[in-house]
Image (cartoon, rainbow over all chains, first blue to last red; front, top):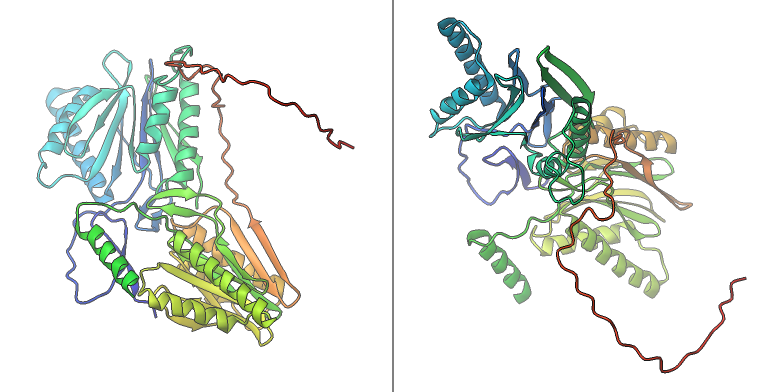
Length: 238
Length: 262
């Protein structure tokens, strides 16, 4: 019999644990369910993509749990982190969207949703929603917009952003391929929709290679003035 | 003894103080072994993780101990490597001294002795399998020095997934091909269900006739088919400064030697 057992640490990740005597276990209200989200804004489109793996510790809960949620015809939100908080947060946002529509007789714009989400998140400053959010959609002029958030509501508008467990691996690659950073003598071509989708697929293939929490499948939501198109691409399952 | 006490004290300093030790690479892992009619079949996946990042996609977890013994290792990668290397060296010296092939019990006792002496500080969970004059043997050695002699076995973070398959389909005195398929399926189940295991499957078959180390036995079915090419032209990286230092050399002596290029 072995005395080494594996328990989950405070943030839900695996922790080595050697039994040496009576130990007090603290209940943690949070758990880390993994997942990576990515959003890219183009001239007249926006792409929000996420993997569909839901994990905890070293186990997989589900291979088909996408993290993109459709809010309006022009906005999609990607939420990764603690799944319980992701579900509750999206429910709250949906309710607030309905309330706004009934009071103001129009749909919320992407910018308005972003500002509202910031206040919702800061409202829980001292018991935060453990969610990394990225909103992708079209602004009032029809141009692509991406808004990225931290768990307590700080946000900014970006051209592209990666969030979640593999964000540190994807963000530098996007900086290079979309922002043309650290490159000399390269033509700064604007990103068209087809190239952007190819890049997103390739980038997630790389993330699935090296991040254990990312994999199974990739769900891509492409937001254009004609609506939201969804595409699913398989990724590594191991 | 003083060296051991010093090591324990040093470990304690790092844990309690503000210095954070670099995280050692663990193998996350599914390893399994099965005793069959003609020998022993060992199997392992090939993923090594460092926290949640895959550090090595093709790492070799089945280590050579002696011509008739191989050992799968799970736990801290450096510990399994060095422990099995040390064991292999000691057994080679023994074979040279005594003129015999080492027996599996001897290897197990040496491992157990060493791991127990280090009180679990060496994080190596090993599956040792081999064939010697007394028969086909499969042992497990835990990081604290515990051993278990069993006909089938799985260790690592994916052990429960692999054990499910082994418990279902293991029969005593299986044929070699059947045993290889069983171990492959057990490792495959670990790879799919456990996030710490993945990529390819290695198999090692040890029989009285010899060893068949098949690496990889099965390659991962997931090939990354990227849609765009990510090559950079020469000159993409900016040159900030350039400094040329000419080496002033003087020809002192010249000799020509023809090379035999036939």
